[in-house]
Length: 290
Image (tube, rainbow, N blue to C red; front, side, top):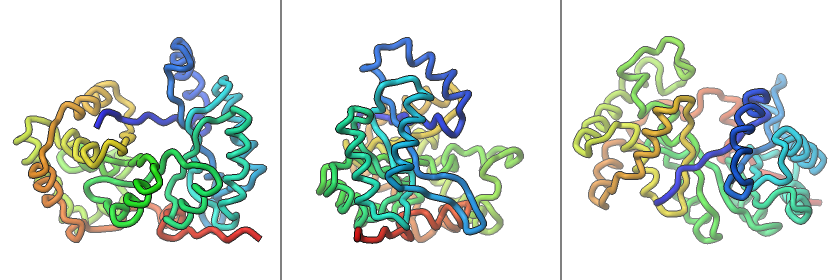
C-alpha cells in the first residue's frame, strides 16, 4: 500500500491541460508518470459514442503526444470499450504504438473479464481502471481475481463514491453540487445512503481521520496492486488524500468498515447517466475477429 494514482485527461480540458503540464515539464521526464486515455468520442441520438478502431487509436495518440508536447505516454488507457470492434483490432494498433515507443504501457477501463483476457493475449495489459469504492464492489468477485491471475494492476476510479464519502452532499449543501442528480443522492435513496455515511463518519472519528480518508484508506488496503485515483481540484484535498496513506488498518478494522456499508443496503444505481452506464463492463461485449 504505497500509491495514490494520478491520471491526465488533456483532451477533455485542453487549455487547462497545456497550462498545467508546463509545470510538470520542469521535472525530468523520467520522473513523471503520465497516464491519459482515448475511446469516448462524444454523443449521438443512441447515447455515448465509443471508438476503438485502429485509425482512431492512432489519431488520438498522436493528438495527445502533440497536445502534451511529449515523446511518449507512460500509460495509455482504452477509456470504455467499443462494442462494434473486436478488442484484438484495438489492441493490435496499441501494440504497434508500444513497439514504436509512443506509449509504454496499455490500460483498459470498464472491460469485461472476457475482454480483459482477449486483450491481454494480444499484448500484456498493465492496468484495469474500474469504478470501485465502499459502495461499488461488484468487481471483487471476478475481475479482481482475474487481474491478479494475469498480473494486472487495479486502478479504482471514484474511490470516494463520487465524493459521497467526503461528506459534502450529506452535511453540506447540494447547491452547485455536480452530483445533485445522481440516483444515490435522490429522495428515499439519499435518506437510506446517509445512514451509511454516518456509520463511516463514526468509524473515522475512532481512527482520528476524516470519512474521506477512511474510505480511501479502505480502498488502499485492498492490496498492493490497488492504486486509486481520487479526483480533486483543491490542494487541501490533495494533501488530505495523501494523508490517508498514513492510516494503518488491521483485518478487524477493514471488516468493521466493510460491514458498515453492506452492498445490499446501498440504494440506487451507481451511474448518474443511463447512457454512460451502458458503456460499463456489465453490458459491453466485443465481437470476435473475423
